[in-house]
Image (tube, rainbow, N blue to C red):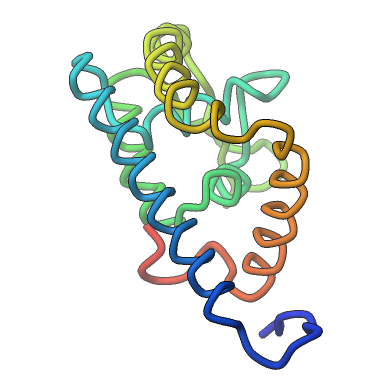
Length: 165
């Protein structure tokens, strides 16, 4: 198991703990706002958008399922159930990997692209309203910091861990 990098101080200060709690609260509230806005527009939940957007972000609209799990931070079992639902709705299909009998791809369908085209404006409107206006000139610093946090936490806690749906 990976350990966190050495810090300059031995323990978090009250201010650092409060910053972490504020980050967690902001994250939960923003996710809730996105989910609420998608539901109000009679669209599927955020997890569907996340899968479709991840697939759409690849050159061929396809990803190995284990790579997709890592990209959207889902356990393989949780992702498998989600992919079952998306496949039933014909938003994606699974294809066997020709050179790995155990491997499979998730492949975005035309219907999946159409659904992504419907969910993306709602997603972006919510992010534009509740996230972006509050960053100002700090957006790059925040991005760099959050990448470091994600890399550190990802090394300490692999995606396929029970309880990480």
